[in-house]
Length: 277
Image 1 (cartoon, rainbow, N blue to C red):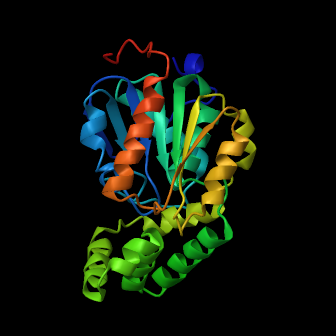
Image 2 (image 1 turned 180 degrees about the horizontal axis):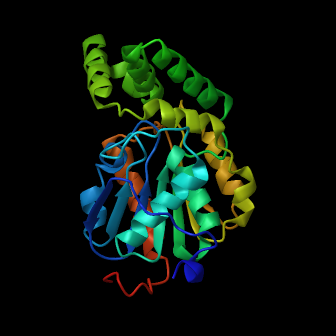
């Protein structure tokens, strides 16, 4: 079965996976230092009304054990696909956010026959200078056990200028504390992978229909990175979200959801017999 669907053999899956809903399959690829609920929690229930969601947690996130060695993009991509196949889904669209966009692109080039479509949000083919610096700072601060500073950097980087300007200092402190409590053990491993990712050569090989969503107020992954994804993938559709930050607030997430639903509804019907339609 693997030879029929994929250019690369699949490993035995070992990631903690969230499975929810029924309908055509959506494989979720979350960002660095995040998780399935952290990245997609605002829309999980809505998408699960008519899609089967498969959300693997990267090593060191959710219930997935931390990695014993540096993360490898190919290995991670294969693990996500193996998780979907283990859940009974032979083909799927992939929703990738931030680091998950690079993971999704690699999934599409290593397993093209399985990937029905890509949705890439706040993504990058290679870390731009701002993201590369953030990844370096996170690793350096973590090495010194300055975890509160890591959480503060994450908050300040991921909120929009407007959201930051409206936050009282006490509210920011509370958000930092909440972020610190929710940081997964694998966060540094994830950002180490961020600093090494390079899927620029993959983009021309992507054959699946692709939607790229660029949050135009993103101060962690510059919007130009999303533009480069769209420019490199033949036929990709680009949607800009004016003012939106790296972490989409509820209003921007609902706009995102409307565009994503319109895109997914334009795809040919799934032929995966194991998935209700």
